[in-house]
Length: 325
Image 1 (cartoon, rainbow, N blue to C red):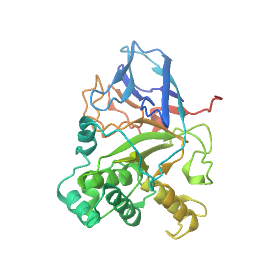
Image 2 (tube, rainbow, N blue to C red):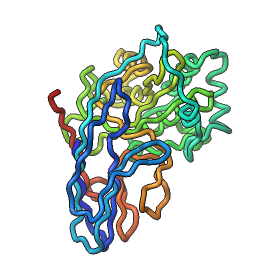
Image 3 (cartoon, helix red, strand yellow):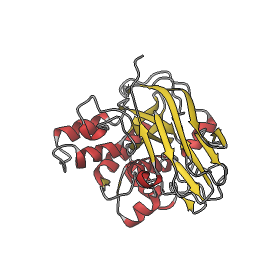
């Protein structure tokens, strides 16, 4: 993965934060290192103390006319699937990890309307697996992908439920799932990442068409289930198949949607990388507020924070190239 930044009109001061694919789960995602070149006066990899998210923080000298940096990361990724009919001997989740996976965040509270909604959805479910599946089915049925949403959305779960507008993109729909699961007492987390290769399972909408993946960010989700460990889920991609899979605007009973709906509770394809699972991330050296999540390059100049959802003006590109094993 090669991420290239070239900042413009900095007003004499500039710094940037480039998310690194550093999330590590040996069974399905293994980062293997990062390197970088550029003209920054300071460049260092910084690790978030709560979630372990890693960023390259670059600071350019005042007056640098053309700030640039290029970051290269290598990793291995593969498909994953959990047989939910066959629980096994899985080491328990540590108390610290459980607490983090049940913790409310700035945009994902677990009380109020989120808790009330979760209790209604999970009523009658006697196991975490039953709760997790009930919430998944409810989100698939009630949320929808809104093509007009900027980027991947922001994931303001309380606002979605209070307004009754459950439209958005992956960071909205999967945050809704995570918030409802946490409110129901089931540990869950968002994983923020990037699509890096076409789908090999026949879904044109679930993979980039070229090696340039600048706008291919995608958030996924997981729930922790006793006897299974972390289980992948992605209701947002079910709704993406509904809206975007050719010919488009498909019905929920379309065979392609039915297959995606069944498959995306318990499995996902390895054509995706994981940056981190962090929320409310403070950017080292920034005087600005924390970001809701870290899935895009970030930068600040003398004029303030740049719009990370406008890579053409911001001037960053991301390219993913598959390497032979």
